Image: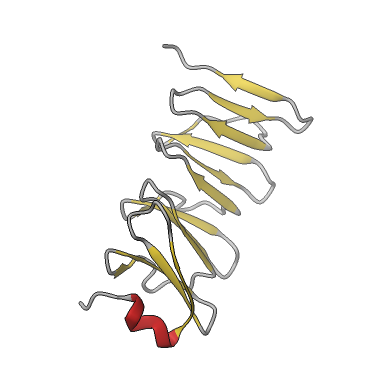
Length: 147
């Protein structure tokens, strides 16, 4: 397999962008509007029709399909498999979140949903384990972990 380089795609690309603080990850958009995410010369989005891609400093990455569903990938495994996510976000400390079609945000830690039974408009996760969620009336609720 030949490594993909910026020079190689230059003639076929509409735009090329290098992510700062992401170990050299870069993306390019072809003339058909598809985005391609490249890491270490390998296309992560090969075989996908991505209308958006994003690389996180923690090496997670996301892509958006033609139906505007977002997919979050960590170490080659799609974390959002089976979900209809309208938005995703990966925290530097491994928690991640996704927004469903009803605009509820779900916070995931170690494969478990922390927001079960909660209608969260927003969430925020902190490296020391505490997290917060915003209810529909605009009130923040802090959830503290035992230390």
